[in-house]
Length: 188
Image (tube, rainbow, N blue to C red; front, side, top):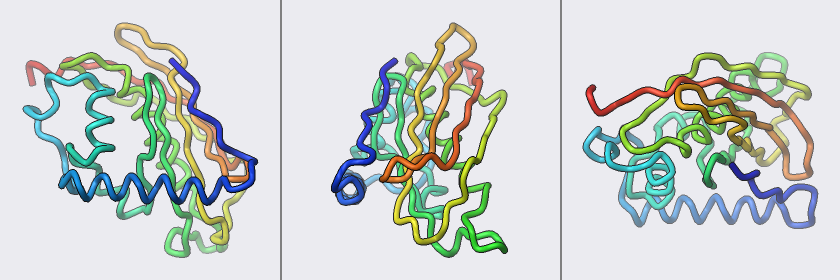
């Protein structure tokens, strides 16, 4: 499994992130897929990486939750996934900071999709545990954050992964880990 490319703490990082986000949204629009759930027939013959790449091209539906919480998948690779989100005012807790549930959702998405990219055709997964460590609050003035997930271990039945939630300046806001159980979807 490879490490997601690092583009933090360099001049123009936020501009590159926004451009990448726009490119993903344009590909989705051209591909015609909307926010929905892919059918078994659409995915059963594809590897997890093929599914995620098709989602990025707009050929398979993407999760509606991303629209609700203002984040989207921007990169995938073998054992990696990167989500980007806008921590805006509607995500604030009563103390005026981004709600911890959003942190967890961003990390869980990168972790799960990184695991998903390692699956062969006919396989799915379910999360068995998720650990989130929030190390710094996110103010609504932060323009974007990225959750970068990567697989640490891929066994026949269990996959583990880690993710970091980072700002464009390299600030670490949270990190987390997951364990996922691999399931057979051919007979479901």
